[in-house]
Length: 261
Length: 261
Image (cartoon, rainbow over all chains, first blue to last red; front, side):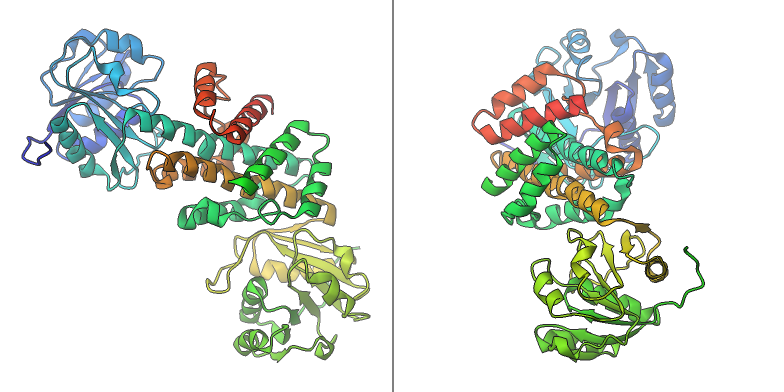
């Protein structure tokens, strides 16, 4: 049973002092949360962040106290198994911030586990606002889900409950939406470079395409020769790509997919 | 020989009263150009635009006078051959505004021809500034190229000389950069809908991806499992796509292309 009569999360510690940990710790600190400890493999990194949020810095995982309301593990996917194996039997809420790691990886750390995943990339240098960043949260206990949700809503207006299975779909979707659309720009850049033209010549069109996709949906916003079934233009483009067989195969498959979706 | 001691273009007429013609006529009018005539197949469309720029409206191509410095043909690619065949032997500079049509299509209209192609889509309803829209211009005579360039520079800071051959490459590149990247979002949307998740959950990531691509180049900005050669994640994604064979083929080809480009 979910109720809002729960104690709010007030004290938070961080495992990791990377880009996301830094942005999140600074933001929670400003929202009156008490940041207790920052762990990093290198004491300098831990100290740099700790000094900004009034926390204690450590490079020793054994120093980490479970006497906090929330322990946030924000490290690389690769480092997760080893760090998790060294954080056993804590009796507090432990979450990670990774998009592609199931919540269950934390099972040996604590009976109370969760995920706090912002769908955005971060850099330490540029301070970001979480206001418009979707926060995907998950917890194995209802009461902890409510606490995480309250904390998330302090900093973002886009808080969504997302299961580990759903997060896998988000990750796959992001490969298409981000990595692959970026590669479409890389192919365009390659084609333009051959004619000594800068990619910037397409910037207003690309920006408008993306804005329109989010405004009316990408399916409704689709334009170009594929959706118009303009065989003359498609055939001409295939001829122009004859010296780039992989680009030609991509052109053919994506054209077919646009016509079939 | 190109020199800047040329008479500037001052009087302009338009064949077409569509989105681009409307935006361009309004902008040139504001920049003190005299708009003389607006032709459209429907007199209402011609009159609507003509009344805003102090021009004469007509739905009869034979009314169009060659006594202007510039005649802009801004109609659909499909309508171009027929309209062009009815505009014979004009003795003034005639340009079209199409991305994918060679300049030479205008050869029978006038000995002085060119292209004035903004790489952006337009809607009538939303007034746009041309300031940051790249204008690709071409002319068969040097003196007319200079005139077109001067006119273009009145309204945009991004004026580039682009040959008909280069415009073909821009058009092909735009299919990848706009139509195909939009379809990558459509695939992402499809995958997310199956999990009852909105595409908006990826918006900040997509926007940052596109900004980064133009900031540091898409090749340098590439991230994700393909460029990391993360075979575990790639194999898992292929399994998840097994019920979508066309998406799986696209995943495979684009992954290969990211690794090879």
